[in-house]
Length: 156
Figure 1 (tube, rainbow, N blue to C red):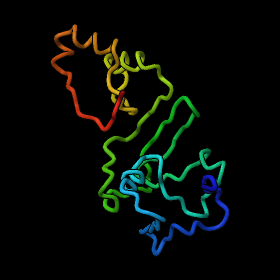
Figure 2: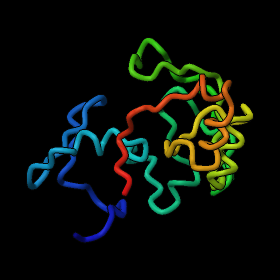
Figure 3: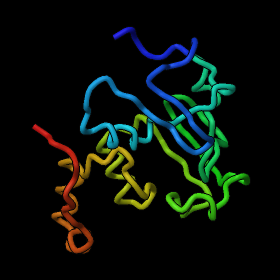
Figure 4: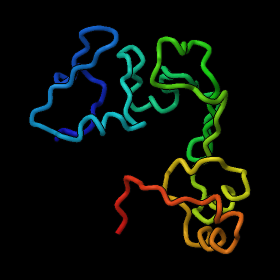
């Protein structure tokens, strides 16, 4: 392993035969590669927009949203991109006009804000923690709205 891609030169394992196709040539089979590439922290970047170590200061927004405001480590505010076309992107439905993500919220505070309706989604996907769970189980109305979904997490 030579370290992460530094932006210098081409990566011989990846080719782009056309504007809509990426081809990866792995040295050995990797059964979970499609799951890895489906993660939200992976995205192709056109070579002319590769800013190497400064990329996080102005990432490419190719989907239904654009970054309207970003406070590193604190908050990200996305708004609908005027360049996105629903007809050309059947995978991402763009269900809302804007979205704010708060980072670094302590888990009990996150649960409190979810239960109060201040937050709509726990994007990290941990689920309700002990204090929030106890509150839900003690309140008949909250308990009636609770579920126990299966997750992709293995916690031990």
